[in-house]
Structure formats: C-alpha cells, structure tokens
Length: 277
Image 1 (cartoon, rainbow, N blue to C red):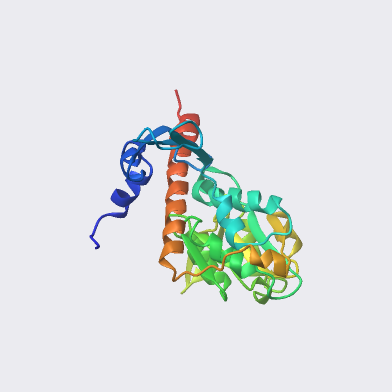
Image 2: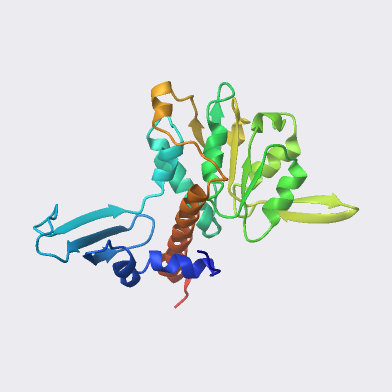
C-alpha cells in the first residue's frame, strides 16, 4: 500500500512526541515519551508498559525504558573505517558546518589524503554526499567550474575527488580559487566573453586524493590520513548502496535532523547575536 504525501508531513510524526506515543508501540502495550529532543546531539527517553498485569518488563515489573542520543557520527562509523577515532568527530562537525557556514568568516577545507588508491576516500565521500548541505560532487573538474559552483546560492558543498589529478601544483588559477574561497570575503575577477566577471568563492570544499596539496591549501585544511581497513575491521562495516531504499531513507532522516538543528542554531544563537538593540 502506498500513498502520496509531502516529505515534511511524513517526517513530522518521527519528531513529535505526541504521535510517537501512538505509533511507536507494539500491540498490548502503551507508550510514554519522557523527553524527546529531536536535534543532532539531543536525547530521548521512552517507556513501553504492558497492558496486562502478567507482562514482564526489563526495567520495572511491567515496563521497558530505553534512552538514546541523536548522533550522526554513527553514520560514518557504520560505513567508514578511520584510523584515528577523532576523525569521526571531525567529520561530523565538518558536516554540520556546511549547513551553517555562511555565518562564519572561514570555511576550512576537508582533505582526505592517502598514499595509494583503494584506501576508502571515495566511501567517505559516499557518506558525506547525502548529509552535507547542497552537495556537488565531481571526479574531474576545472577551476572555471569550481568558481561558478562556488558562486551559486544557496552555498554549495563541493566534493572534489581525485584531487591529485587537478594539477593544483602547476595551476595557479585553481590554487588561488581554492585558497581564496576559504574566507567569506574571497572573490576572484576573470574575463568571460570579454566581460569582467567577479565570482564569490566562499564555499565548503572537500578534496580527496593521493599525497599532499599545495602548502597554503594544507594550512587551510582539516587533514584526514586515510588507511585501508583490515579484514577484521571490514567485517564490522556495512557496504553503502545508493540504490538501497532503506539506506536512502536513513540518510534522508539524518539529513532532515541536521537541517532542523541548523535552523534551531540560527534562530536561538546566531540571529540574536546579530540583532542591534
């Protein structure tokens, strides 16, 4: 059975404690939501109680209570092996940053670096792509394309794979565009069809490739040194499949939660600081 409905209407019952108490309960039980903060980092606590007095609970005589936290770091841990556990936190924070970057003066680049191919950099991009804000991914691009995409609004998150093939060491125009876009004031003027055109370059950018980037770009980057997972480590990971409807739904839910968090941050913290009294 299927029916058409706006995504927001389908998603809303997953965030509101009142409908959760009605649908998130097995037959023969009642549900109580003690608290449910549906934001990244938010916590929840829910109790399920048997209707019959003969029911046996795990927490109290007839009740099962569980709690948890909304944490999108788990999406990386499920699919990606990082040699340094701090990378999971850094990847999560950078993902959040892409949704609120326009409120900051700088947007650090994310650099996924490895010594050889097949270390898992593209898999990290597979996880980032459905989570970051307005993703644009490319395996082969040019400085002109990057400048045009960075100039678009709303701000795009650019994922540049195979960065070692971008000739950044020998292409000063490309280097300048990536370096300048680190700052909110970053701009570059070029002549297009005989007309001087200025591009805004401020945008979050992730680069994946073998070996290092030019030094100025490295100083503006969060660097992940990626290594291949061992056989035992691979057994703990799920294979990402963008055609799997269950995985797609999971990523959509997490992306919506991040969007909700970004709106809350803007309303509660950023806008009040910008208000002139």
